[in-house]
Image 1 (cartoon, rainbow, N blue to C red):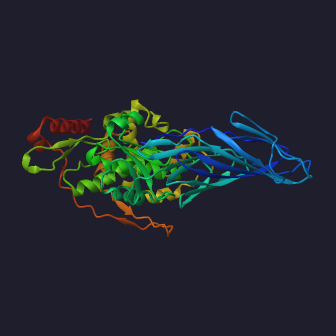
Image 2 (tube, helix red, strand yellow; image 1 turned 180 degrees about the vertical axis):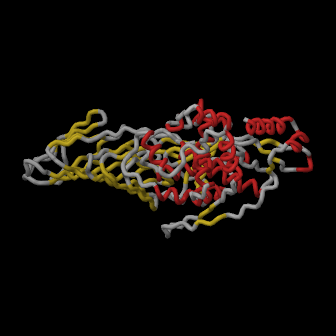
Length: 482
């Protein structure tokens, strides 16, 4: 599950100047931050002038160390709350000036979990004018930036460039490093599979080297995350519950896809989540498929709006478990027959339609793949300029590439056959290992052996074991008769 971010930017006000570029440089640690801001003022009317006045937003808990311009130290400034009002030194009439503000922020960074820290910055800038800078962060792991900014990472630094104000979030600390993740708390082995299938399926790689993961026991997780979730991604890092057994790697893959989507769909300012959750659910399905093909103790993935399936890891004991379908086909049929459309605005926080929404989102992606689509190639097609705030507009964009109402037929037989086609399709599993020196991924298809531990439910076999199998069979039989 991915959390949404809603941010408010505070703009700077400028007097006696028509344009201004801004450069920020910050040194960040657990205990504080020093921020140096250079504001390049250019005169374009009533020019030249002998001084400038400006009002600038400063961080909360910031103390001013110095304010200077090209002439020298500025004494004519005052601080009111989170604003500093500055008048430059009077001197020769000139066309441009640079004001440099040095600040010290003493507030501690927020500790997410066991040495994983977060610091957020909202840095002002002028609309339509360049803002750029660099953050030096002790033990930098990952970051997040607001729409319209480019970023790059190297040697504990984050560089950024764009226009206007910017919001940045950095995550840092010393965790247990694997190839693709930095874990804080206990974690499971074989985490490379979660990452490599995620990027092999989407064709997307994040800008920083590793995702930080706070791996929490259940009591801690429930205090900071949604109790109904097993994992959450927000702004460059993940939280995952520890006590979920063989679900740990699939859930990690699910949250990894959210992290990859965070970069690719930064233009999406809506709260609807059908594509984000659909791709995350699909990759989770692929990881479960891979794991269950190798280990008979790993629960195989269930169908989507289909039948419960029988999971029989040990045929010798005459017992089995049922893996329930994700989503009730009857509910989907009624959704279409009643021309409902709440999926246009659905998010994972919609508790009334949560189970349906996740299943419907996965169905959209599976329908695309089962008709010959390749998800990594689909990602390459999206080229949206400008932010999208309207759910209707977002739905239109995705409708250009995807059938947003899969299996919508007036005929119940066609509806059921469509779901059977999607659930019986042999979905390929792709994997990739990123190369920091090459732009292109080398994606390979994994060989998945036939899973002999997952079987469908037919009448004779079901009656052998328990009533659940009979109920599943009767439900399917009734649907076919309608």
